Image (cartoon, rainbow, N blue to C red):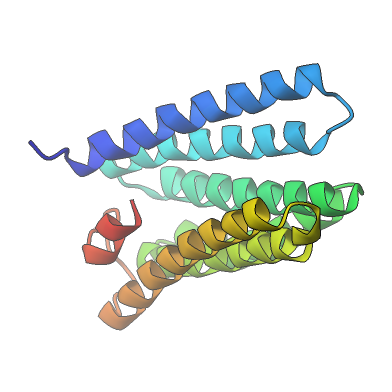
Length: 191
């Protein structure tokens, strides 16, 4: 028996919530590793996005559309900040502010103005860029633990590629207005 898209989406959301709690608990026992708290926060923001996106699937509209785009791009920006913090030990805020500032400024206006197709294209493309940047941070820090960090960089890169693929399929379709959540083979593959 295959699971439907909504069930898979909710499973991802609950799994991510558990991951966030695990990271938070780990940070409580090793507070000097502050990147764990930043990473936990990023995953928690993504969890919020998953549940908002599920609501958007059921009742599409500009408010939920803007909220789902904002949460995903903010979550991935915080994730980029966590990777930078892990690699350098410095504050994640500059990376978070630049990533979120640019991506939100580009993706939110089309969605708010009713061009949800364009909004989702931009969201997926920008999410891919943020994830590729996160992979690059881990790649740059691979000397600390070569095999695990190369694996992490690869996983982030594969996830980034799936988002870029979703953007490409939406772009190829060329519809600036969808009126519903994107639904195509790339979205199914991405999940």
